[in-house]
Image (tube, rainbow, N blue to C red; front, side, top):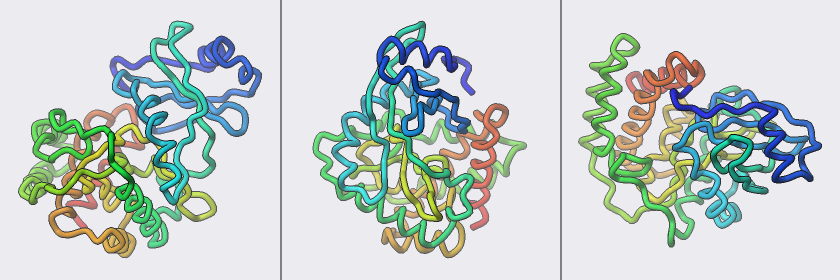
Length: 294
């Protein structure tokens, strides 16, 4: 999926485990099919998963989650990843990697129960609990690079570039109009709060018809909570979308910024992944369509 991606395979993971965590090296190991872009996943036995960064920008996630998820998890109404161990470079692999507890469930891309009022309210409750957590010492949004939770204006150049690259794939003129409307929304001027930053369908797990877990906290930081409105267009439609907004008590300005976040993430992903990750590319198209034709 990336020009400079670092490859992995079962043999590499087995050697890493044998060298660094030999007490787990006897367990069965299998690659986990995933549309995720940052990590390769290998299920280890029945109740563990090994995650190895594919690309340089994901290298810090293990440390980020090790620092903050144990503090946030007790405050949240849904399960989040539980890190069991962090390994180091070795066997030709250059970066830290981690072992996590396996979380059962199907992701919202595949679940018929994702687009429901019950799921919308459960996710809103999770977001509210996350926002209420003590922000002391938390990582700030990267305002220079347009990181999640930063002002939308910081993403303007990258978003417009992606719109130009997507001509022929979507209605670029309509996307440009929608993007400019989002940029005109009042900027968030309250205290920054905890945001997940990447509440896409692939990061939401559904089990027995109910939302059960939120995974992949690579974008966790303090910033504008409107960023976590992305599921309104990537997951929910109709009554579920309305229930999500009501449960979060979102005003018009935040809703417009959230729409901008959904649009920007989708339009940047579309040309980048159109040939390498059909799940993400198709999800981006659906998100754009949901924004242009609510």
